Image (cartoon, rainbow, N blue to C red; front, side):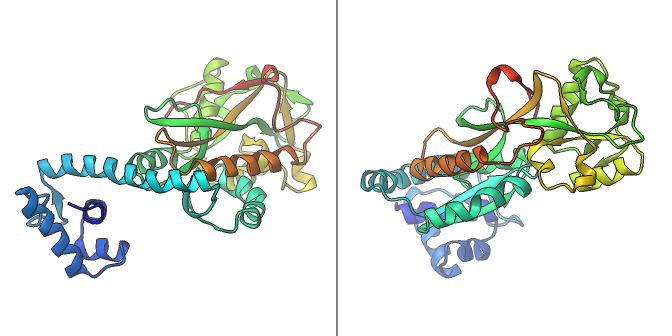
Length: 320
């Protein structure tokens, strides 16, 4: 039994196809098939049921894949220990970012990080929280940036910043003349929301539930982007809430529609999350340092810092 054979098994388990798995691990399909067959003969069991389309794991195969993932992770840890001892920050690093954070945060730190750590080969994916957690669990991501707390077993959370919610209230709305808004001013019936699957939507629902202004039957206007929500609001269809960083790139006319919340400001906690095995921690720490640095230098709206003292921030407990 070799680590290479276990890598091949994991590739087939993930892709459910020998040809696709071979492409993923950069070998020919006959080579991959032969190595897996050798392993099955050595163990005297079948790992895959090849009669099924797509290929499925046998009952024993499922247990083997689970253990193989642990073994491969631990073998990677040996190289990781050596890299940390040498102070080496480089190699492939797979990062997931949720959709409500990626468009605003990624442009803020990516160039700085690449220039500072040119030996790191970043592979970045935009994924919803559930997909991120699954990929972290399976070892297909090294870390992710997501809204927390999640409180998931086996996952560590390292907070980066607390991002306030900002109201986008057009002139036609009942709250437009207010200089600031409070959670008790909100009514879920006139708030435009993101589609299901976005954790930012859940934060808004929780905020309205806490304020008692919540009707479980009313969710008709939903969109997959903040830009669409802003346009709908401008058409007089309601108001919406935006994450603070998203407001920085708005035009002057749109910024006239922004309203901060009264203290304590509702906000979401944004964190780097990663496996408790703590592989590639030198890169995770480097990411955290760079992101924290660029966030501190972010332009502020109405002199409100993106990183606020804990006593002025009301973190939203997001439900997933």
